[in-house]
Structure formats: structure tokens, C-alpha cells
Image (cartoon, one colour):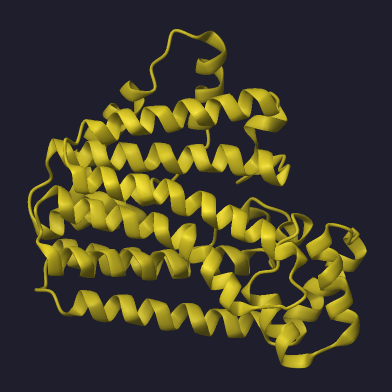
Length: 324
């Protein structure tokens, strides 16, 4: 049994229930929409966010139908945001598969994202829980604000780690935090345990994003995205920010400005990737990620030992140690 299977072991049956509800929520009579949805399903994702929802809910109580509706709603919102992000970023590939906008077109991608978002709201409503509905609604705001913040940073001449963390807190960290908070709310965990759960999700999300950003400097085909892909999309992430601020190298900074403006060519991006590697950027980002992992593990260590706690500890380690 692999690491992810061990993590899922305490919620095996509930994950089947989630998958059935998720698939049922996306049933449509429209042939084009069904084709797009079938394409999205082929990604065979690891279900990291639904797993987290179910584990945190089970940590604090018994998984309820409300938990499943919350998990489906959050996964639909996440999927919608990815479809829309690919249009905004003009991405042609995601995790080794053609993006919806590349396989179909931008119009189909935007409308599919809208459909997924609307279906997310339907599932949120089925929780009949105002606090969970607010969590999901605010997540939608955070994801949009994160994208806009990222776009507005293009004209910023500074290479700010603060802006970087502001963006990932609004995007990836907010998503994982919403998963863990909604999970706790779904089983009536109480104010203190709900807040601790939310904080755990935030730490996991920060680890997840930093790990993804480190992947951008790898040549491994297993990862599913080409080296320097973030820079091709105009994004400067933690490893390169650290290297730039550590050295103040004028040539590297000029290339970084061109990356922000979307005018850097592939040779310049390759040079900036190598500059990041040779000036400690990967090591710095890894150290920051490990700090957040330790903070998450310390939160879990305050809870009674159980199979579910062990799975959540393994989940956090998996996020940091994964290879794709």
C-alpha cells in the first residue's frame, strides 16, 4: 500500500460516497459540457482536498452528509478556479494534460468554469449551514483577489516576498484552510477546534504551494509541467525572489523584470532558473516550507493520538515529500 493509500485508509468508504456525490452533481444533458467534464475527470487527481475535508471531519466527529456536500462544493470551486486560471494565464497544459481552453477554446472554458461555480453554490446550499456557506463564499472572493493581486504585482519593481505570501494566502492557503474549517464546522467541532483546524489547513496550503513552486526548477517529466513554466506565465515565486534579494545581481534583476512584463525569452528564463539554483533559492524555499510543516505537526501533536491524527501527519509529510 502506497503512502496516499495509507493516508486515505480511515476514510475509504466516505471517499467512495464523496466520489459518487461529486459525479452525480455534474450530470448534464448537454453533450459539449459532458465532453469537457469527461476531459476534466481524466486528470485522475489525487483528491487531496476532499481527503483533507474528510480526515479533519473524522478527527472531530462522525462524517455527515453535510460534510460530503461541503467537500463536493469546495472541490467544484477549486476546479472552476483552475479552468478560469488557465484562460487568464493562457496555459495550454495542466499536470501533463491539455487545458480546457487549449482542447476546446476560451469561450467553452469560461462557460464551463461558470457552470462548475454555479454547481458549487448548489452543493453549498445543500449543507443548510450558514457558516459553511460563508466559508465557501469568502473562498471565492479570496481566490479572485489573489489572482488580481498577482496581476497587479506585474508593475511592481520590487521583488517582494510579502506580496508572494499575500498571493498564496489568498489562493492555495485559503483553499486548504476553507477545507479544514468547513470540515470542522460540518461536525460541530466548536470555535477553538474549528480555528485550529483552519490554521492547520493554512499551513498545509502554504507547504503545498511552495512545493509546487520548487517543482518549477526541476527537469523531471514526472512533475507534469515544463521547467520555468511559472516564469513563462510571468510569475516570480519564492526560490527566485530569495535568490534575487540575496544577491542583488543586476543582470538577473533585469531578466526578472522582463519575466514580470512577459517579454523574457526562453533562453533568459533558463538563465534565471540556473541563477536561482546556484544562489540558494531552492534551499531557502525548502527551509521555509519545512518550518510551516513543523508548525502544522505541532498543532496535530496537541491532539490525542489516533489513526486519523496519524493520517493527517502523514498527509502533511506527503505534501512536502511528494514528487509531483
